[in-house]
Amino acid sequence: MMLCFMVKIKNINIQTSFTPNIINSPNFTISTKPLTNKTDKYSLYSINSTLSSSDETLETKMQCIGPLYNQSCLFKNLYYVDSWFTILLVKGSYLPEYYLRTDAFNLWPITPNKREFDSYIHLEIFVRNITKPRRIPYVTLYFGQPWHHNIGHALFDGLYAAYVALIRFSPRHLHPFHILAGVDDCDGCWSEDVYSRFGGLGIIKQRVLNKLTIGRWFIFDEIIMGSGTFCQRCTQPNLQLPGGVELNASRLFRDRMYQQHGFIHSVVRQKSSSEYRTSHDLLHAYVIDNRRFTQYDRKEIKDAINEINNYTNFYINASKSNTTKLEWPLIQISYLYYNQVKAQNMSSIQINATSSDSRSPTYELIENDFIAQLKILRKMDIHITGPGTGQMYQTFLSDGSVSINLGGLRPWGLENTPKGYASYLEQHMTSGTPYIKGLYYPINERTKGIKKDEVIKLVRQAGQLILQGFSLPVQPRENLAADGQLFVEMCEKDKEFCASVTTRSPHKRFICLEFWVEDFVHEYNQWKEGGYIDNGHNNSCPFNRSLLRQLREKYGIKHNLENSSKPLQI
Image: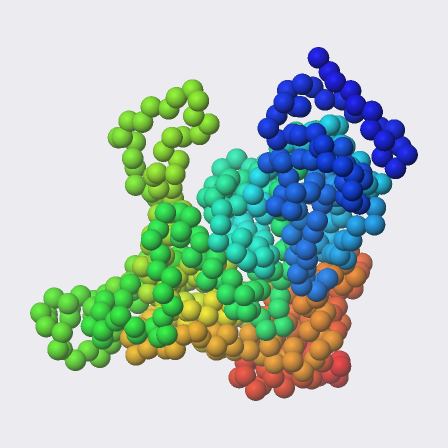
């Protein structure tokens, strides 16, 4: 049985139909109030529905934070149909100006579709009786993420960047939320499991949603987007992980990662690395294998490990008291391959799945390999590795830990030539993590390969810093290597250059945004005089070359200039 009503709204006749079960629903009532005010004048019925948001409207509302260049927006009642977002508005309703980038590697903003209605009742009838959307409750966090097969990109160019946007709308970052991820299909990408656990309400893959929304409507209660300039590859003038210091994002990200993976993680902030320690405490250090290490490097590192461990084992075994005066801190150091860290095998415990189980009944109860890695990370005092993905995990270290960056060599393929130079890559991750201290292999020595004595010196220096007590938070600039500090000063003095490598906008040349400090400092490729030719095009980025060379001398960075007889280009 179908009941039809003829409704006159602003002299417009609208025929709308309702089935009896809708009319009898406790969430639907026909209003019997007299039309005594402007609101009631255009009302047929009043609604008390779980579909409505907190302000009892189905109209899309939005709030944006930050400048247009680096903006995050919270939408309430944002619709999704035919593979894209849609805003539903009453004509004359206010929307703030917005510019949303949701993918760290796409400089262009996204623009939701927009549909306007003559009145709110028109909008409501359209939603309830025509589109009948499927509701996605609570908060959803949206971002696009290429290369999520690489855990470094997955965590810090996708998830972290989006979480910083969420932090702007406190306290939502402390509560469970959905993740809507624009990721490619990928077998074995365990980063998807990290996303799901981190949010707490699961992951929705945009590719899947798109297939389900052909001719079908969904509505997000609340959805937050706008993270494209918070990625770790988004170079900042201060050379910090975006939001890591000023929004406390690195700490919040670390703490939530542990919480959502089942750890009881301390939230007490230390004022010094030496809190709760004594001079005889055993410190735990790990060297994480790095593909940039040569076989010679590995041999030198393992010789250093043996010497440090022999010293520690001798004093632990020789002395039963804590009164022995030690020349060096007691450090137990291990060599670690992350891909060999596995969760405890629980296959001996028989758990029977039922036909109604949508996923493994043990999913949130037993460890996965990432949890096994976090268990090691949270007890590390000293984290040692070279550039690349292995450096990303330093953000998960506990307060008062030390990260040692052993560096690598660039350019690729020219490492063992006179053109090679030291490369630390992710030092911005260290400077954006103020609860740890960063140390670096000497910049002018790295081209000679990793040496045992230098490794021992760095590890023991780290141990002494921890036990003697370095203050927290660490000043970000102190956590940069010499070339990183040079870049920050260069940015302060050459504003035009700084904007060209840090302002990620569509009109900027991407070749200048594809920035690594070491390439710039050593005037390689687009930074050398005259640039370089690629497919007939000259790639060159301008800057004050004489200033760079003055700063290189100031920071004691050795460089063999090619064609140094040429006049300086300013």
